[in-house]
Length: 154
Image (cartoon, rainbow, N blue to C red):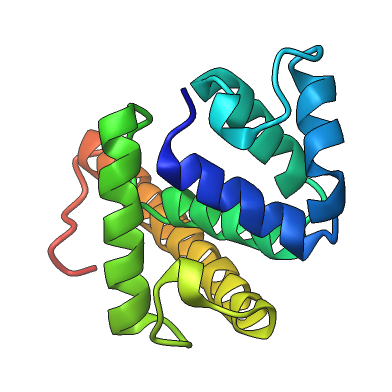
């Protein structure tokens, strides 16, 4: 059975996309007529429907992009279900503490999400430059050591 949070998310998405009046038909189509109720969805069916609806909701798309950028920046990591729960909490802590908006991801409006997305893009760009610089410094140091050159004056 679908979880309470999945059902809530599903209803929010249907409302945001102005599809709530078509909910029974959408669910019936998804389940091949087995049920018309969101409570009758399996975990897999609910996950699938949420993913499909998120493709059409610009706010949900931004939230997904922000989560991906957080992973690229090294703020979050891992891919297990437990990691996902921890990552959500870590990202929310980061956004409340250092984010441009100072709110949890799920509580941000669309304009706030755009600001957060822009900030996360900048963080990833800086993190990439830092990684590149460290790799270049290590390569230069290794080459100088290999050539028996003194690196203490550099």
